[in-house]
Length: 115
Image 1: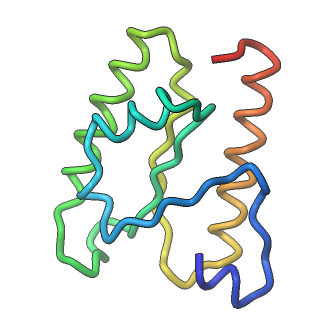
Image 2: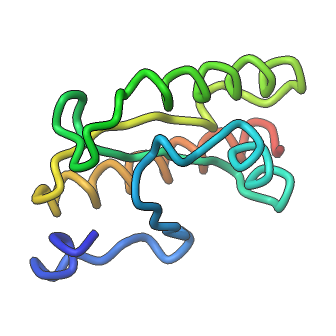
């Protein structure tokens, strides 16, 4: 996020960024809570596998992500509304692009079937 700001890139207004020290801190309950509070979509964005500043195993978030996808599917929520993405900390353009692409996907889903 800081790299994007330094380069002068702007995030979509509707994007709400919640910074955490590491994606391994995120669990199923937090992901579901975002939807409960009205999020149309949730993008989990973190370090590339093997490049974590905290030397955390990336399988932790993958497991929580898969659990959340399964539960959302049972609840009738489209799987495209939850995304797990990796990015290098210095890729400001990539950060903004991924968020903009996700926003576009969510807008398309919203026109088809609101959450």
